[in-house]
Length: 327
Image (cartoon, rainbow, N blue to C red; front, side, top):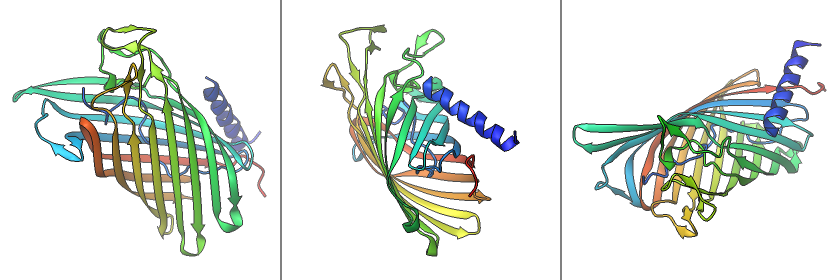
């Protein structure tokens, strides 16, 4: 058996295995947005592996769309996150995808006095996702693709995280600890004559409710903490600059609904943020893709008073494995 076929079988087996098995919502539980523009269908029996690293920093309070300066005890928050996405083309119109990630660190730095700071840290696996995508309208000769998808969002553990025997705040938990559902709509239109591609991704996350009461440190059947659902809409424009170099400009809006405790709206949760995200990628023989990108918020509107993101940057590496028969 060739080395190529062996590698493909191992990757396919891995994908099958993993598929079966304070006022600060900017650093809230769950995985952050991914760092790749490869979100469409795969050819039959092809495999795609995406790895990325994201670094986020926040140090500014907002109430509504107005910057606040009176809340200064929380100096800043940040996180470092490593993500992995595996995709497999089941048929020419159906692609399976698995996502997971690990928070290397989630940090809140408090400054209660001018000369004293206290740092609280969390870490661990974020939420995982299993998604099936279906090509509702795919016309390669016209360079058009419309894909719909649905899947499950799940925690790797429903237990809250403790550090040094002390439970860390809800916002620093790496995972929501609850199950949910996702849906997506993807549109792609290519213009080969001018090496231009325009595409959009719309994704909705529906979160479940947790029975763990951080106030009492116990599970309670009569308690319910419902994480707000999230709607993300992105528009991308990709243009070839020179051989093997591509520039991408993304505009992304994220709308997170407010959380609820026992059916009552939780204060200082929920937001609307519009990001601009420039990206530069380098392609190696059409299979390896190395990219660097940044996120900068153009508009922020927060319910109550919350710490808000200042900037984020990411690196990603993508590799395609063509495991089907060559035409």
